Image 1 (tube, rainbow, N blue to C red):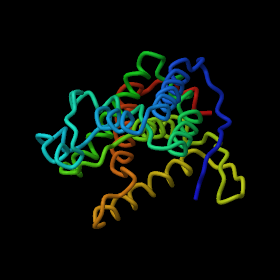
Image 2: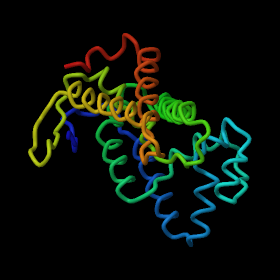
Image 3: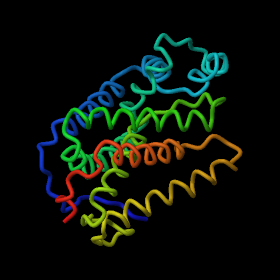
Image 4: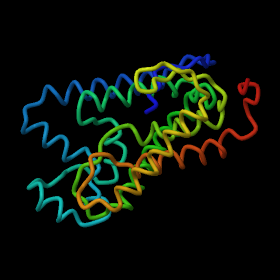
Length: 231
């Protein structure tokens, strides 16, 4: 298992947007854990992305959860990016965001980076929805958007040194190996999930969709630029 914990890639811009996204995620999670159980459940059902609400009439979700929602389903493809199911879920996503996003923000600039992040996240969520349209399991987390960030990072900094734990052993590896291995595990787990009889706890196809979207978007909006950052 590869667990990255830092990189040696110097940032060019001060990553205001990355820090803001990180802060929003933490504040939303703190808000979540301060809610009563009933309020937390209502908040989650309304602002998470529930596939049946997005591509269906929402009747399955209403029957399953017993709640009608007041937030438009399309809005939840964005709001769900800032919700997390547990502290470890939040921590894992924020570590990956902290490692990879600042350099991608340096490539794109602040305004483009906001659009890039949100587009990756929305496409990631819709990919999972496409795979599991009848599901009433809420989709939450920033990992789809962060998957797109990782794809962009790998394309622009394939040789960047990433400090990684392989089990308990620290190893420095190029970004293309770390991110490439991570993406391969998402595909393997995603295929396995297709043949699973139950609802899995990880939205693998959200990760896959976000990664593919991030790679394609990076090629489109920053092609031919920043060649000097490949050192």
